[in-house]
Length: 204
Ligand code: HEC
Image 1 (cartoon, rainbow, N blue to C red):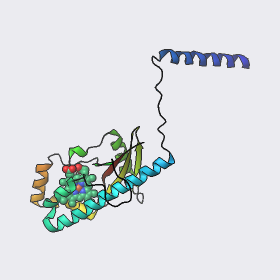
Image 2: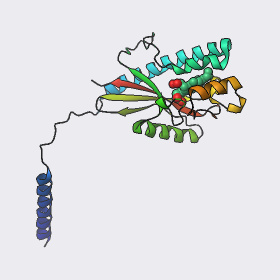
Image 3: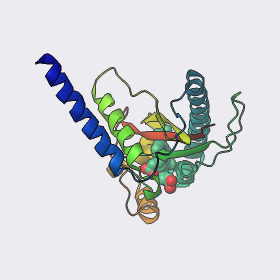
Image 4: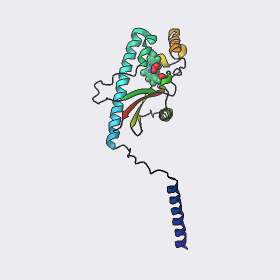
């Protein structure tokens, strides 16, 4: 009896296997194994951190300076630039690395997330809700590109343009309304999760 049921079992398995093969029209593509090695993970982490650091330091420094000398309206253009030359002395080769910013509440619609970005942003937003667990950087692997995501939190200086709009000057509200009619990026408080710096790093 035992033998018999095993026999039926293998017969069914054979049948299904045959079925699967029958529906396949072309031979399976030979795919490279894209599982990252420990070495590649380390490379993407180091490169992503370095690029994010260059962008944050450069933006942060310029923002503070511009706010002091010209006020928020004049400083608007500082937060517009992400094309910062990524060649500063961080000791890591940043050739070919692409940096962008993504958020669930964009000021500029060009910074809207795609599906992969959105999943990361949602995970990080959830992490912020647990006290004492700030969101950590994440890596998502595509076949040809690794995306390193660095979380951005709202600091004091950010409130000038992303805080409570009733506290903004009329000039700033005007300038924002003109340049960004679909602005969603106000109403943040200190320590809020604002979005990410996304660093795209080509895979070997
Ligand atoms: C002087 C005003 C100003 C200040 C201060 C400022 N921002 Fe912005 N921010 C802007 C503007 C304007 C944009 C839209 C940029 C663009 O057109 O891409 C923007 C866009 C962004 C974006 C891209 C996503 C989006 O909404 O379009 C992020 C992320 C961001 N800001 C984070 C910050 C953080 C973090 C700080 C504080 C360290 C900060 N900003 C301070 C004006 C400002």
